[in-house]
Image (cartoon, rainbow, N blue to C red):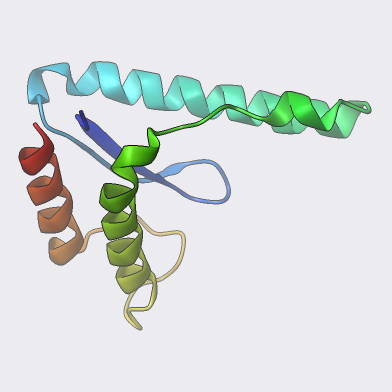
Length: 109
């Protein structure tokens, strides 16, 4: 189910990327950056003209039965952000966060 996990900064750039099948890692990076471009285009279009607000809805990004997995990921991300030694906007290099993501991806696959 989860083969790639990415954490995106509010400025629309990746803070953390991890994928399980390392032979397809470049493909996942490409898909991530392409998705970021789509989001960036939608946001920039909103500033140029009056755009219908419903057009900005990207759809359900994950199945609702996977909520527990994303809750665990969000909890670990919150722990990283609350670390006084982490500077917001820097790449996430926490060993605890990385091991939690790896365990979560192995458990799902």
